[in-house]
Every structure is written in structure tokens, then in C-alpha cells.
Image 1: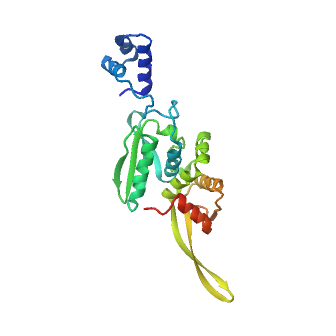
Image 2: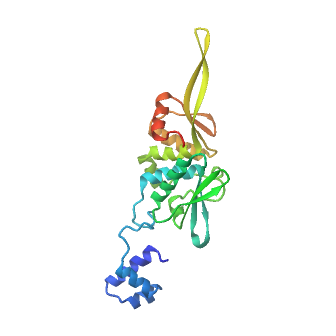
Image 3: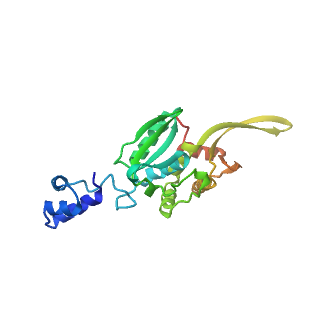
Length: 249
């Protein structure tokens, strides 16, 4: 399997008048492969190309959501020949979330299949690609809350354009919509007040700050009942998150 750069180099040489045999010897590619590329050239848009290493286009909307999913429940692991596996874990009680996550990964990297790997209580969505670290430079050894998580400039631009989808990924991975209640004393009478709020949980202070920043971009007030927990509780703000995230299913 030859990468896109070798194919482009071979086609450029053929277009310049170089022979099949000469291109084959110089690039170390079989003559039959060079002939196949000449007779059936690849599409102008290569679905396997890395949008950070080549001039291919990053599907920014899908990437914004996948970035949130990765920061919440995703990881990268290195395999043989510098191939990396992107894994995003989804609870089995949310089948629609599993499907949406698989579709989001496929939208970002349409050149690779998305595998479903069963684990105790969850399904891991797995995609293999050499260039996943290009799209997730936050990858590193150890757990995310034990290392610095800082977005690259181009990632911040994506989130700034699609804060709703970034928040969707975060809340679908490490968030929930819950019913709460409290009491108020009115005219000497204690009354119960029921309300709904969104919660986001993460041990990484850096990821928590990114969630806060995205909420600020949408002018959605938040508060921190605990250092690892964020709450959005005002009725109108919950209604907006309902439109962005909605209940898991």
C-alpha cells in the first residue's frame, strides 16, 4: 500500500514523459502499480490524505464534535508501523450515541472504516490511521488530567466557529442532563422547586476551562459546584443546551 504522495509523484513523472520502468525503479514502486495509477488515476480529493500534512480539507464541523468526544472519552494508542488507533468509548445504554460517534469519526476520516469493539458495559469505536496524532496533538502518555491539554491555534479557530458542536461532543461524553430540586421559603412556607440542569464532569482543569470557554462563546452562564463539576441551570440556558445536546439515547 503506497501513500498518496508517492502516487502523486509517479503521476507527475509520467506526465513529464518519464517511462513506466524509470518511474518504477526510481520510486521503488512496482511497474504494475505505476501502470494502474496511470490508467485509473486516484480522485483529485484523496479521502486518505491528512488535512494537516496535505492541502486536503478538514471537515471542521464534524471535527469540532469529535474533538469534544476525544477530550471526554477518547484516546490514541500506537500500533505497528506508526499506525495509531483512535478509540472513543460509549456506554452501551446509549445506542444512538454509539451510532453518532461512529458517523462523526467516519466524517473526519472517510478513508478508514470505524470498528465497533465490545468491552464490559461499553462499545469502543476504533479507527486506525497514521495521522490521528496530527489531528489530536494533545495525545501523550498518561491520563489527560495528569498532563497539559492546550488546543493548537487551528483547533481554537475550529471551536470558535463551531462551539455548539464542540460542546455537544463534551456533554455527550462526560456530561448529563439531570433533574434537581431545592426548597424556598415563601411567606413563611417552605416550598419545593424542581428544575433541570446540565452537568459536565472532568478531572482535567484544562478540559474544564475549554468547556467554560465554549459556553462563554455562546453567552451561556455556568457555575462550578465542585472543582471537577460544571453546572448550567438557568431555564433559558438549559433550553439552549437542549437544542445543542439534548438527552443521551
